[in-house]
Length: 115
Image 1: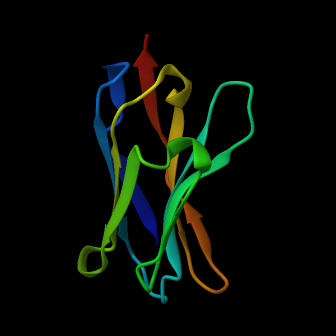
Image 2: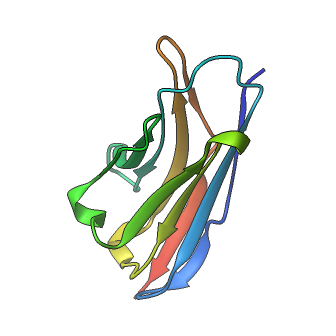
């Protein structure tokens, strides 16, 4: 059974930093990509950052230069370093792992940035 366990969310002031972690267990397939998505209240879920199996990364324009995604293949873990946080970054952040035909989500972790 695949499980994604996220940690690192919380309340931070604008300009602060947080580091999210997502550890995947029960993986029995080749991972194509691991990523972070977020959903703010009343808005659709959006991609924040993704790291592909080859190491390439992609970011939403709104977080480029502030957020960094990284992964530990041996541990099936993905991290999201979030710097210079803004109130508009407030959302539930969810981890995603996908293979060719499989797609799994974590339960989400709340990130709240106060002004």
